Length: 296
Image 1: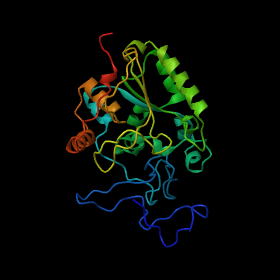
Image 2: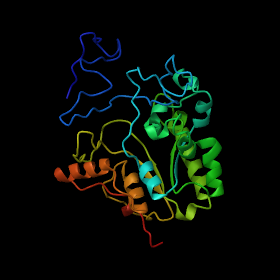
Image 3: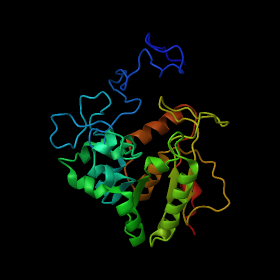
Image 4: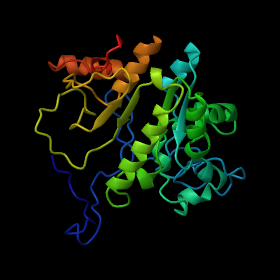
């Protein structure tokens, strides 16, 4: 499928960025009355790629009038389900303390490669910095000041997410593979030294893989994918040795594993994805347990 260029589009990408006839940040309303965010949207709370409005004396929010500021989201998250079950969890982020102390550094691009749009929980109303400050402190944490200390002390929450700062994410154009590999290896080495290691499952995964080529057939599900395959690495005392797992997984398989491990209700998005796969003649996505041996 080819998108129709706008009348103002340059004749070549060499002469200017592409502009399309129906290019926007939000899709038109669909048959179910739903809108979908496309392209890069920014969280409504700082740190955000959008500065606060001039009238925002607190400086805690992104300007809601900006087209790329996504309104606070209210859908149920895996964090909500864990909270309801009484299971502690946290999202650790590289650079989080730095940009929280100097929010202007994000939208003025003076704080390295901290990407505000890479931190999903900051898009949700449950982490409003004015009305839910305690939840932010409890669940949104810094890598340098908290993650390593918590790992060493054996106090990482039962469910822990970690997103490195952009300089270490191996993205072409502003990062490199060797620095990212060294960082991942260092993090895993420190986790293996943690008192919690004997009961730990580490999943290292990516959001893309350098292009769209894939020799394997991409399963058909809904309008949002799945797409071509991306790398994932499982490190655990329970990982099967010398074993090639041919189970079909997607990035949300980590959520499926968490759901199974803690007996949580299944998020609607997981139900919809698997139902769409089955409707198109494919198997539902796995929950990573096919790569693990719990008899060890």
